Length: 167
Image 1 (cartoon, rainbow, N blue to C red):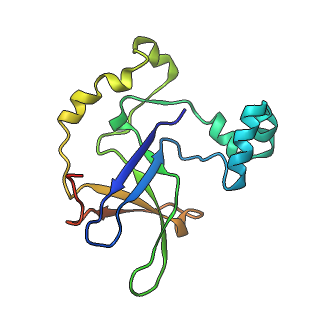
Image 2: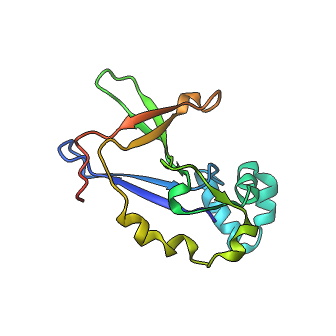
């Protein structure tokens, strides 16, 4: 089961209350639109096998590699939504966020978990977060939608002074 993350931006004086980035730890998403309801229904009725036969995206989601992060801080997260940005010149850009750890991505296979507790990800979390320093120069990676089909491209977005770290 993928892990989830929610990042809330509080832009302050830009007329918006907040913006959330909801991400999960897999690059796949099983269904879109009405398909999400069909997937949930198939899970409840026990027809998930048929749904997976008919939908390659759902099959990739379910059958993808079962890797486990060494810790939350060494895992990538992929936005489940695409955002549309329209600057003053009117040229639209579509972006999907990726949260990439500043540390190396480290994954464990299921066989490595035998020596760990079932709560290993949470066991050190409080201590780890005490040592985290947040700054306005933290980077978020954007994946441009226009390049998804040909070659994914990441660009860095520096968080500016509008970021309210206290909320």
